[in-house]
Image 1: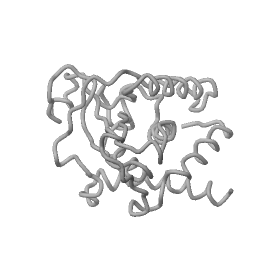
Image 2: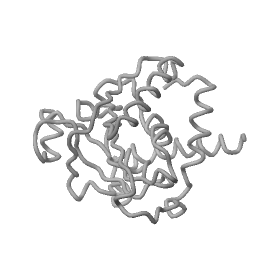
Image 3: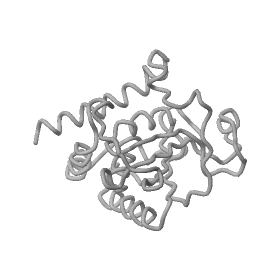
Image 4: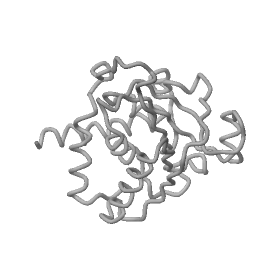
Length: 212
């Protein structure tokens, strides 16, 4: 993917403030569940996106699931068939006093290529579409402004196709999908796809940190 130099610098510097090198360094919130906020993103296979967002300070929970479709409580097999209308997503619970929604948007844009329509790499289908499901008017405004800014900057060298829609449903994925990367480090997909994506980000983060 292509970023303008100035915009890449802004994104990575922002990322430096939120990502720790290990999950155990993550600052956790002591707030009650009712005082926290939620954000929902689809950026390809939810195993990859879950692993990245679990490393963000202020994020207290990341749950893989399905949103945006017409079928109630779909199964993974049904979603993979591409007939339910759902996207694989993660729903993030976070403390806005520790991490802002704008920062979560930065992580979302870094997590995938938003110029690919209904696919991420070898994962093809509407269930892998790039999508932001907003939970409030403020989230909608911030997401649309961010997308517009990236397009104006031609940050990726191609138009961004990310869908921005109101959240209407979220169905947690089956238990075996939760914490998938941590639970299945030897899985071939984790080794060949999830791991390299995380490593790529961490290298960019480390390089930017050393340069500042």
